[in-house]
Amino acid sequence: MTSPELLSLIFFHLTLVFFVLDLANAQGLKVGFYQQTCPSAEAIIKNTTAQYISRAPSLAPALLRMHFHDCFVNGCDGSVLINSTKKNQAEKDAAPNTSLRGFQVIDAAKTAVEKKCPGVVSCADIVALVARDAVSMIKGPSWSVPTGRRDGRVSTAQNALKNLPSPFSNITQLKASFGSKGLSVKDLAVLSGGHTIGISHCFPSVTIRLYNFTGKGDTDPTIDPNYAAALKKICKPGNLTTIVEMDPGSSKKFDTDYYTMVSKRRGLFQSDGALLSESTTKAYVLSQISSGSTFLNDFGPAMVKMGQIGVLTGKSGEIRKRCAFIN
Image 1: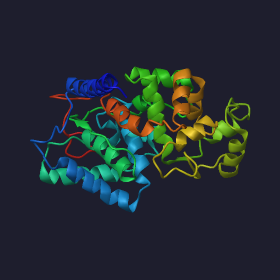
Image 2 (image 1 turned 120 degrees about the horizontal axis):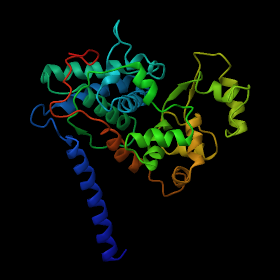
Image 3 (image 1 turned 180 degrees about the vertical axis):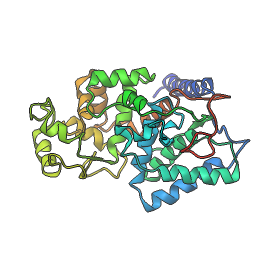
Image 4 (image 1 turned 135 degrees about the vertical axis):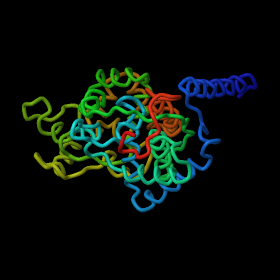
């Protein structure tokens, strides 16, 4: 590489770094937000997360999913943590969220931080930090998390149903959903890679695709027939309890194997398979199965961008004393 080319490459990366930092600052977020008010906050949260992940590594994808589900509804404001009341059905009780796990990790981290720095660290920031820590603890990528979010006071199941991307989504619906949150088509392709870890219940996301795709007792024609046959041996019609790996054979490892499966039309969800039906997302999928894979480097910046959706900062919102309850 010539000297001018090297300088150009360095300049590009520096520009990208400053762009991300400027965007975070514009949102009122910054890396190290608690450095003065609670210097040990991130270490406390990381240690608490480690205690749980060491005993149950399967919590890592669950905690990552929680961050996704928080940010896509009302923004990244911790509203997914709020309990329902007699007068309000909260987000966590909406159908797409009833399988969320890991709330005990958030609560434990919050309790530990409150003992050290009462009323300082938001539940929304804890969700973002725990997601990062959990992924890195199973040997996935790590990234610097801009913090400074405050907690929202509104949580409704209706908002969750309206805003969460569905596993039944086609590419048009996915692009509209992600685009409405300020995320690009590339972000869609990168963040979908989070399905490289974790499991799903067969019903309804998988069984409908296998047995009643268009309401006529048919199978999604875009899925590889051999993969469909293998899934049908596991996921029987009407089975509400069986689970299946999202990335078969590699669901505990944060790697690029998800894209290999998608490229072979073996993505578990319709939304996974949809990545092959659009030029940008298809190109990204295919680029990840070559020696020039960028996914592990792309994932962190995409998570930082997602983590800025609709954040509350400054005097907006509140710092909840307990994450499941509005003050």
